[in-house]
Amino acid sequence: MTNLHEVFKNTEKAIATSVTFAHANPFDVPANSPYAYHNWANGWVRFDGKKNQGSFISELQDWHSTWTFLTAIVQWEEMSKEEVEAECEYDEHSVYYKGKIPVPLTGYQGGCLLKEVPERLLPDVRISTERHGYAMYLEVDEAFFKRTDEVRLIVAKESNPSNAHGKPVIVTWFPGTLANPNDNNGGLAETFVKYIWR
Image 1 (spheres, rainbow, N blue to C red):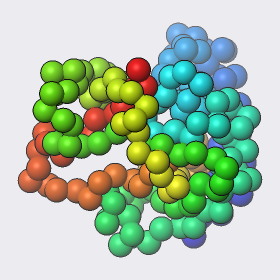
Image 2 (image 1 turned 180 degrees about the horizontal axis):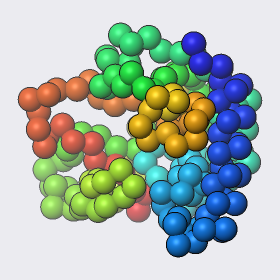
Image 3 (image 1 turned 60 degrees about the vertical axis):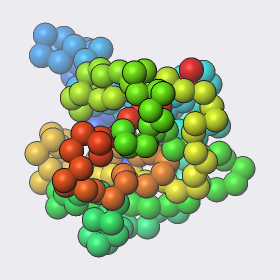
């Protein structure tokens, strides 16, 4: 069992170390590189009042409120392997947590599977590159975003190949469930399309 209090401390230290290293070694990891951990962590602020990054909570619009939400407001519960597999593919090098978004905060799930996009909007789906590789986006109005009181947190264990920090740290968090249940035969139709608030 992973101690989340330690994970939060490790994460804060990893962010500070990333900032220091990036500024001291700009040719190895430029300070503005999306792969620098501090910039990755900035992506956890999922809404700035006008533009979202996938799923978001409308009241969390800066780093302080987001970090306070993650570390002091949500009551996190570690998920079992079976619970994770019901939502997405399980990775033994990660630890998954679930929680509830408390009132009066408002959570929105920011996307759907490609097969769920209305046919009239399919020509508007666009592909772009981001830190994880290719992603699909669709600009939509607020009405497309479904309300959710679920929230998930993913932690990289020390054994995770993408974890260069030597201790468990946060990978990401988001409102909603981990993903829709996998359908290995679904192909492109099962690809997640992120909503961007128009």
